[in-house]
Length: 130
Image 1 (tube, helix red, strand yellow):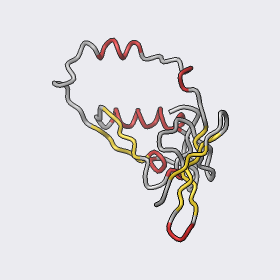
Image 2 (image 1 turned 60 degrees about the vertical axis):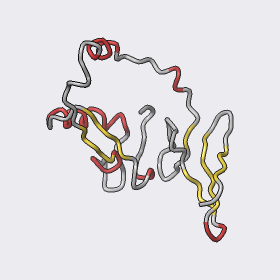
Image 3 (image 1 turned 180 degrees about the horizontal axis):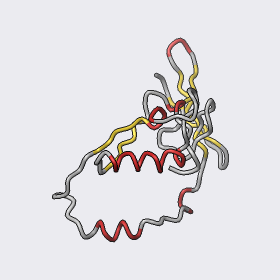
């Protein structure tokens, strides 16, 4: 694929520029980003995720009571961009997906969710948080 050169600014967005075969340039999204532009744009937006207020103290406390090596584990792997859609061409945001996906996964008896981000990040319309 050629060299990858991230274009970074203090504020704004990040894309990875890769030189490909025959000199074509492709702009790709940062696979480790936490916040993204809405398609058809695909840059990662620089975001300070250290300000996020976690609210999972109760879950963390009850997790300490269990032995994870003896508890059953079943993973529901899902491509978030195609699991459920608003319209034929528009995916739900992460916030819009969260409640119905968790309800479905619990109803089906799964204990964990695995998120598949392929075949294309363009099919995912992320919300403000993950």
